[in-house]
Image (cartoon, rainbow over all chains, first blue to last red; front, side):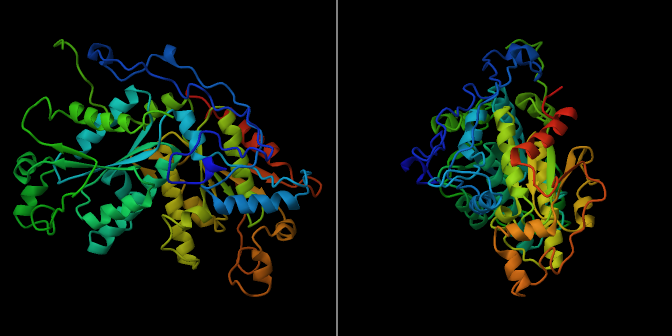
Length: 293
Length: 208
C-alpha cells in the first residue's frame, strides 16, 4: 500500500494494489514514445523536421482491469464503483473491484517524462517568449512533449471574458495556473510564459501543484534593457501615457525571492543566447528527474 | 558552427507534437444524463487508448469544479460558463496533440454547439470535436443513481437537477450514439471500442 500513500511524492510506476487481484503483468510500453536521438551537432538540426524512419509507435499493452487508487479522480472512482455493482457484472465477493482510470504515472511512463510547470516570469521584453520557444524546441529534440501557455493562446480563448482590472489580472493568472496544473497532470511539460508581476499570484499557482512540480524561472533583465528592446512598442506607449498601469513603468514588478532558475542578463551573447538559457532550464529539469518516466 | 546552417525559428506546433505522439489531437465530448455512464465510458476509453499507446486525458465536470471552475455554482449562467471553459481547455489539449475526453452532463444544446465553430488562431474545433451521446433512459439512470442525486432531486432537496426539473436537450446530430440494446446497456469496453473504431476510421489514431 505504501507506493500509493502519498500524492505529493513521485508515484510508483505500477498503480496496482497487490493482493487485490491487480494484474502485475500490466506493463506500460518500455520505450515510451519515439525517442529522438539527442543531437549535439547543429548541422543535423537545420530543420525541425523529423526523419520518419526514426518513429516507432508503442506496441499495444495488455491492460486488464484492476483495482487501483484513482487519486486523480476520487469522484470518478466512487461513481464507477457503484455503477459496477448496479450493472450486475459478476465480480468476486471479496474484491472491491472498479475500473481504474489511467493515472498520471501511466502517462508519464508512456511519455518518458514527468509533468511539471515551467513558469517564466519577467518584465515585458525580458525574453520570456523567446526562451519559451527555445525551450520547447530543445525539449522536442529530446523527444519530450511540451505545451506553451502564453497571453496569446489564453487571452482570446479561455480568458477572453477578462479585462485588465486588478481582480481580472489575478483571475487571469489563477486560470492559467489551473490549466497548467492539468497539463502537468497529463504528464506534459507545460511552459507558462507571462509577466505575472505579483508575487502573491505566482505563489498561489505554485501552491496548486505538488512540491517540486512548479519551476519558477525569472528573466532577470534590467528595465533599461527591456525598454531598449521594446519588441511590441508598449514601453513607448506607456511612457507617452497612452497605456496606464504598465508593468515596470507605472505598475510594479515583484521579482521572485526564491525561484528555481534565474536567467540573468549578462550582456554576453553566448550565455544570454536563448538556446543557452533553455539549456540551463533543461539541466535543472534533468537533475530533478523530469526528463525520464 | 558552419555559416551555411540556418536555424529555423518556427516554434514547435501542433504538427510536431502530433508526430511525436503519433496521433491527432481531438475532443471526445461525452454528454448524457447523470448516471448514463459518461465517466465509466471515459475511463474505459482512456484505458483502451492507453493500451494502443495513445495519450488521452479526461476532463471531468466534477474534477474541474474543484480547480479551474471552483468559482462557479450551478446557476444557469454558471453552467454556461462551466461548459465554455471546459471547451476552451479541451481546445488547448487538442492543440497539444492529446485526445481529450470531456465527460459532463452539458444539458443545453446551445452551449455544446457554441464550442464548435469558434476559431482560435488558425485552429478550430470543427472536425475535431465529436459528440458521444449516452442515450440511456431516465429510468435506467435513475435506477442506477450512482451519486444518490436523483433521490435527493425527487425529494425536492436539489432544485434544477437535469432530467428531473431541468431539461436535458439531446443532441440533434451527434457522431456516436450509445444506447441500450433490448433494455441492456453495452459493456464499457464495448462502448469504448465503438468510439475507438470511429476515431480510427477518421484517422486520429495515427499521425498521417
